[in-house]
Length: 206
Ligand SMILES: [Zn+2]
Image 1: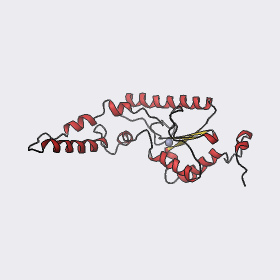
Image 2 (image 1 turned 60 degrees about the vertical axis):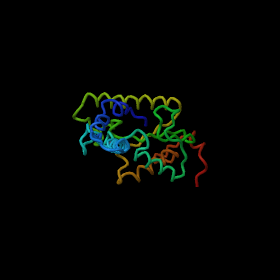
Image 3 (image 1 turned 30 degrees about the vertical axis):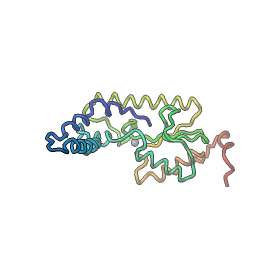
Image 4 (image 1 turned 90 degrees about the horizontal axis):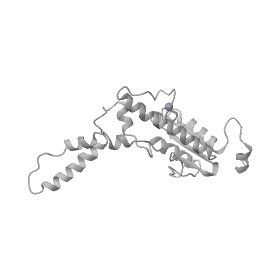
């Protein structure tokens, strides 16, 4: 998942101004320069986890801290698949959307999507923020359209694209969902609809 976080990172993000404001204003003594550098470093790193623009506890605040790579849910899915013996590439730049998991052997790609960033339709975890509506609508619609485009490209190249949603990975649901994902990948899904092509590629199952 390669999110368009550039605006948040470099645009109107209050981190920079916030860090400036926290700079020590009075520095006295011979060690002044050393002290001020140390202080500035410390305040700056603290500032990165608490953007001023969003109030703590709001969804925007939480979302603003999520990065595009190696989020908790991605790690969760990858470690599960790894434990089940699957080997894959992660965030491979060669494919549209830098898919979270690429399994060449099964010609399958898995995206692990946050419900907010990827506008999960009908999901309780997704609703358009009530402030900065225009900004968020434009941003999220852009993400959503890009997802659709990238999926079409991948499928056009013969990849099977699977999506795991954040809301399917709650403590309650994750075990069942991950087990199902595994079966979807290796072609043992419940429907029993294992295509001749994929069945041919699989080792004989006991
Ligand atoms: Zn969802």
